[in-house]
Length: 244
Ligand code: PEP
Figure 1 (cartoon, rainbow, N blue to C red):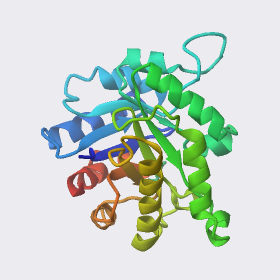
Figure 2 (cartoon, rainbow, N blue to C red):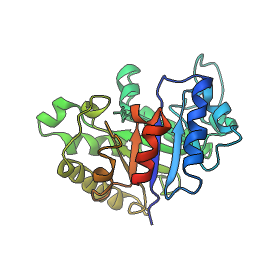
Figure 3 (cartoon, rainbow, N blue to C red):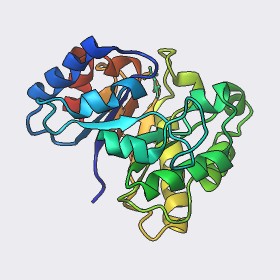
Figure 4 (cartoon, protein in one colour):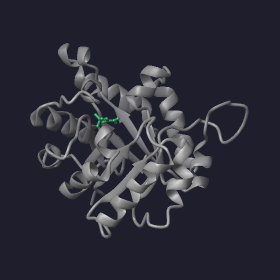
């Protein structure tokens, strides 16, 4: 059975004072029906993981380097994230693909590094608005999944997040039919390629809010969400966790 996951991506937001949101979330869901993950900025990963009242809330990174250690100023390795208490790492987010020119090959190498460190990789894919308008959505996500996810991916070490670039932080979402089309397509791709393809969780991401989470979670092959803005406050993320 696929694991359900409500994952929050704080992006470049949050200082120590925001860690109270993780404890508030944990106390609201002492025994959540799904896995709950918060990915704060790298500066907060260790402190978040060490929170005395974190309970079952898992902590993840937002990126990692392909190497374990070395002369890479400003970078963080998967092994360092694991050492800090992270269990997951988001890789290939569209903001990193756009801001840092990350290619599918690089995301794949980072995913290998995450797996080697024992982290669960949350690999992001998604089309731009121009791709969708040109009818290229399925081709684009197929190429991204093929290129970004290594052959060694299993249900235990990999989660895929479908995040249409045009839906991230915009308040716009695809129709439920459009989400279903992509998720069903990705499921078929995973089943065709991986022994455990039917068990790899598929998240939807892009302007998920308390008001639309339940209908999105009811869509076929949606196993949870990767949430940006609405994950920053427990009062917003809590209803999303509850909807899963
Ligand atoms: C994201 O950053 O992955 C994301 C989906 O952002 P938002 O929920 O704010 O659209």
